[in-house]
Length: 411
Image 1 (tube, rainbow, N blue to C red):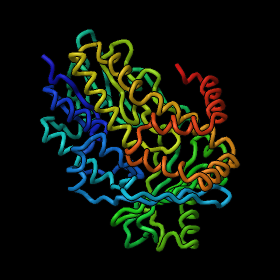
Image 2 (cartoon, rainbow, N blue to C red):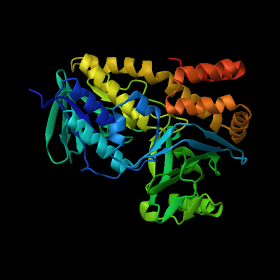
Image 3 (cartoon, one colour):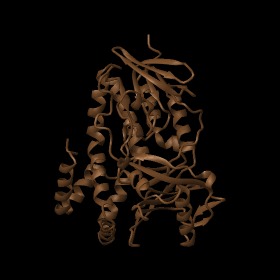
Image 4 (spheres, helix red, strand yellow):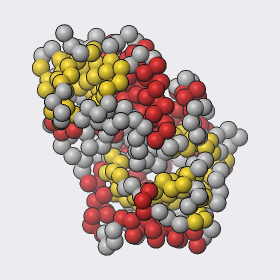
């Protein structure tokens, strides 16, 4: 007799969405996490507003926490050009993960999931009939299926040999602080500010204004940082914040006590996001690489992948079929979008001049700005947005298609 039909390891957005959907589907589900909530989670905290379109019930969850719903986006190129985009309705929701994750956890519990905290997974065993998770303190839990939502450093993926480590060229180092507005604040609290091709390492930079905090950060490929680094991450962060203060984008001072660098997988999802030998362990969120490689947005894709994993486990009757079902589902709903995001990333970040050209094109093509905002807000699907761009620029379509073939991403 198993302890549960499904064990969900990790109570972030991916895990909570999986646990919620499983519980509503009638499954016995245990949602475990090594931490005790509420807990801090390093993250920019931006969610495209289309999440509310995909998950209508999310509006009620968001009403219980602080959310800065922004309609203005400012995109800056390396040469100083700027593309300003606005919409009548919010396109991005800015939240604190400390609050958001706890609210999602409460929602999963309300729907019937059972929560087990301070369960730090150290060992994983699979056998013909199920999966066993063992904790550092000796506790042991069993289930027919495990949904691994245990983050970019997934212990479960390492123990099973699914992913020992992400390639350094497929991971971004995000150097960020989430600081109270009493210490550091954005001077344009209604605008999401992003810079691509930023700095010597050609990465990205951002200002995400929250209601009572501001998230400010810079990021780049981990491989670039390790190859070119001459300063400690916080020294880079402090210089960046001081530059923004001098430019009038921020007011106040950086606070090292709120500086929490973290890694983001930006090389696309695992080609097989389940444990092939057993078919009973499904990898979601950062553990599965479900992050937009261009924007580095992960929360929306974590939520979708978590819900799809729940659907696969339910339809697979908690058996070895669940893994194959999950791969079919996520590849159908997210595969094209996430594989394209890798190509866009490689296309843009190969040369700062490319970013300059894209921003310049956006300034001269108002329909493109509208399309980007509509997509972020959920008023246009990815398929619709993609078709519009490729029809408008056949030459770009051919170039991207060739890159897809070169990198084997049509498979």
